[in-house]
Image: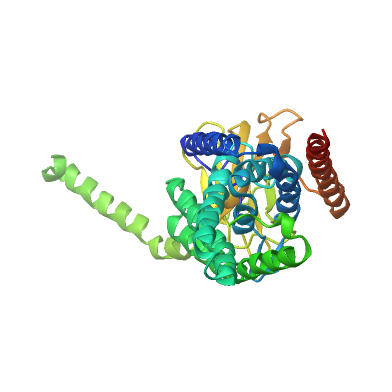
Length: 207
Length: 164
């Protein structure tokens, strides 16, 4: 789910950096407008670690493996903080594990961060009426949106010398392998929010 | 033009005969296979995901050092993610091999030494790093430790602000 170094055209990678930088600037601006910007920092730091660790885990889904993306969870729990948290997590994964790449960091940020923000917005709209449904929609939606952006980036950046039909077929298999994850992340967000409500209501995001 | 003269006709016949003689072995030529075998240095690729799983049926694209824009050769890995190719020793320099599947993949560089002499070596660089489970666990633990520290730092500062 991370675009690696060396396979993406330079122009696309540069555009990815520009997009991620703009998104990061916007999120910093919004964070600075919060009444107490430091208040959410401990949670953002811990969720960065969770994102880094959990999305490095590979779950075998034959014939391939998938790893959790957590865009929905990050969005719901962190709001605007999700953008810096995701970028820091991706950077650490690229540097420490070679998972993703430094040249594609911007693109990988654009795969996850906008999805997180959209899920957050959807959750805020739905949560007052149907909290569980809102959580499932946010968790599942995060995976669907990230997958859509990933596939779009791969198809846009497909060089002419690559067998496009084979690559499209492989992408189809890849997307199908992620369908269980759509369900799993929806349930995950619902469970996390329920546990937080019971154990530590102070950590609950404000809807 | 000399066909009409007497010696020319003779020459013509000789030509036809020679032609027939040349045609006679043709059916045999069509079935005779010629096999030239020569030893060459080859590069064996093994493409896996970082989980250790093979990249089966992945696309392999090979670029020669003289033209990094046009692929020199293309192929597909087998079910175990393996692929074998012999770079042209007449094109010394850095060969680039790309293996990709569904947007994932890796790039390796193969250095082909100059032809002749006693050092026509192939050396391979790149191709991603391998991390063992222990290394992974330590790195994850370090990052979690850092995040915990950051969290506690901000929490404490907030507590301090509140008491002040």
